[in-house]
Amino acid sequence: MWPSLLTDLIGLVALVVGSWRIISGSGSLGDSPVSSGRIEDIRVVIPARDEAENLSRLLTSLYEDGSVTGPSIIVVDDGSTDATSAVAHLFGCKVIDAPEPEDTSNGKSSALASIRSVLLEGPDSGRITFVDADVTFGVGSLKRLYQRSLDLGGLVSVQPYHATGGFSESMAIFFNVVSLVATGAFVPRSKGDTKAIFGPVLICGIGDYRRSGGHSAVVGDVLDDVGLGRAFRESGQPTTLFVGHGSIEFRMYPGGFGDLVSGFRKNIALGARSTRSWWSILGFLVVMGALSAGVVEPLRSVSTHGAERIWVTVVAYAVWVVFLWFVARRVGRFSLLSYLLFPFPLLVFLMVLAISTVDVFGGKVKWKGRTIRLGPGT
Figure (cartoon, rainbow, N blue to C red):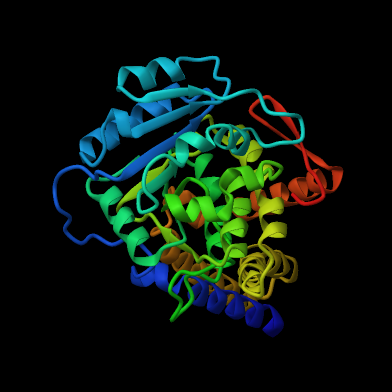
């Protein structure tokens, strides 16, 4: 029993240490007052493939924020078959049709590489913001992101607050928590610098983007965000990560459990392989602690029928529920059941991780109707 309790405790310590700046709020963009009016030297670029519904919500949030208007927003239509282009035109955005990518390339990075000349228009001090179509901005959040970029330089990324619509979408709880803990960006005394870059929201200076080589340097990468972060670091520029709690959010998989599995299947193992660091041990310890408290120890208690052991198991389980809630509520809006029954989201995480690992070794992944082949540098 005691080895299991030690594993539980080590996992909890890893969870708290790895998410310290998320808990304290210093790892978010903040809620400081911002001036009204537009940002004159910023360009918002939205790569989109069959994202008409999401795009409408994103553009509405940007207009309500008031920081940018249609001409400053570029929608890169990556072969959409729905009304993505029509929605973008309705909001007055500039729409560019991206060419169909080659089999071995990522559609998103290829689409953005194809408009390199457009992205590099303007002074080096101007800012480019890359935003996924399923993101929405709170009022003032784009200005805060812009200011962070001016202060820090290099590439700044934000993992948005994960809004969910029910228990099936809340199965994403461990994908969110473990991936953020494993970055090392949120440990005490960190300033958010990390090798791990999250692609939903990225911002950088035009001159910095040019020096890194931009998306043209990472066309062969399936995870364009990871590749772009690597390109920035190789050019001697910092990469910094924040969470979007209270300011920027997204709803990733409204289609339910099948979409969730398909989406994370593409990202989870490949992302872990591409951003290897000692901080990944924290993520591993969190998983082991949760597995011990939520699965292994309860099964042992039931099989032994020892009253004392059952009570200790119940207490350990309850402590994990509380700590997981304390951290994850600042990462996303997950259902109460996902906390109370946390072994189920944990087992989903492990299942998808195993499938994703098989995909990586198999050399290809599938996403949005495309089979994407993984090159040796991916």
